[in-house]
Image 1 (cartoon, rainbow, N blue to C red):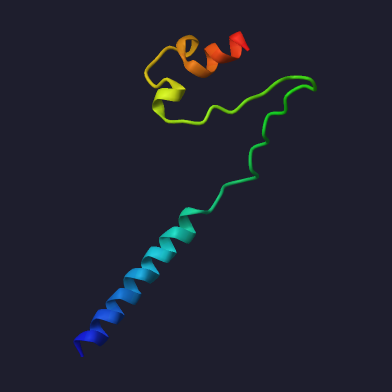
Image 2 (spheres, rainbow, N blue to C red):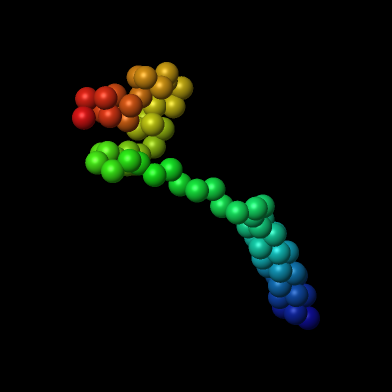
Length: 71
């Protein structure tokens, strides 16, 4: 009997979690368009954490911005 109640409770919790997940993924309107660079423009992707992006640092002093200016 305890196992039955545990499994029933677990299935209810899972169902609620799944419902929140599905409803949380609902989007409003069409997706935004990605910006397109002009032909011949070099682009790069700076992967990393807050040190890479320069959190709490002025935009002109951030590593990706400085790297783009020198590249």
